[in-house]
Image 1 (cartoon, protein in one colour):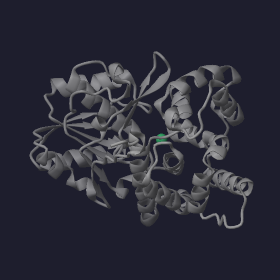
Image 2 (cartoon, rainbow, N blue to C red):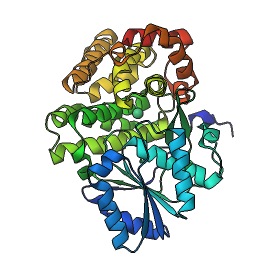
Image 3 (cartoon, rainbow, N blue to C red):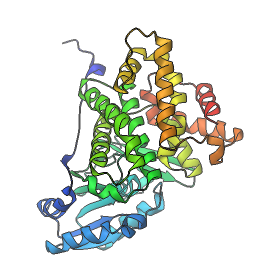
Image 4 (spheres, protein in one colour):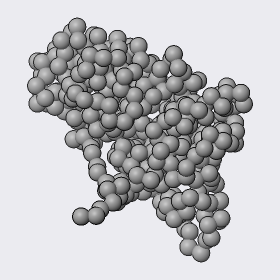
Length: 387
Ligand SMILES: [Fe+2]
């Protein structure tokens, strides 16, 4: 048989429970995974919002012991993963639960990897580097955007290199994702905007990725459609439960799409920015998005036409130049409405940082599935345009 294996596609996903109140199933899942002593990962903000205490109560009411670890900062660091793994080991825990945004969830994935291998997390950078299965893992996202709860990605910051590195493996897909829109109600407008635009970038990059295919396309397009319609009203009214649910659903679908189709230059460049300057991931993506779309557009015109249509742009009768202009304008309008308008220079990026940032962006695995091959100079120019 003469078959082109590069055209084959696979799709991995955790067991997902979606809907208001789904977090309350955490004890059932933990017990089914054989838990006696749960290691609960979160961060101080989520703890302050009251979600950690609630999960502890639910687990303890089911007769489980719980050790809580909240030593996670935004952009989780190598040392935090190692400290968490040491506490997991010394407490003799057997199941990991995380409740929080991308940072606690990625840190929990890192703790699982280190616990399974007994080696430093730095040794697992890259694709398919994991040889032993992590402990059972249940993730409960409190933001609608990062989708670490469904993805094959763990992103860890290495402060020594000022670099965020990616671990990509189906071994970091959790066993269960309890996706509960109720826990996103403690997000403010800015975090809602940052994480919602991150989800939009996931969907767009997954749809134009060279790893895209029929298993991920429908998820990506539906996510674009939902975010385009619901993110702006949600940021204006963050307490609306219907809008929260719609954006959470979009985030989940974007996550399933990008986890399997991988991403592109926005994420490669944004990981580099986030590692270098410790900036919020969603904000970095937002500032880069239209510049990367402009760079990629000629190399994926038909795909971007479908993206534009999912953003409710009627492309009938339009030529490619018009579609590109309308799509760029809509992206800029959406960013402006949700309050993410600044430029990289306002975040402290200077021209002299660009060669360094570009070098690291080219080492990020996400650059490999970008629809347009990118040279060092290409990446530098896109950063300069976003400056
Ligand atoms: Fe992202």
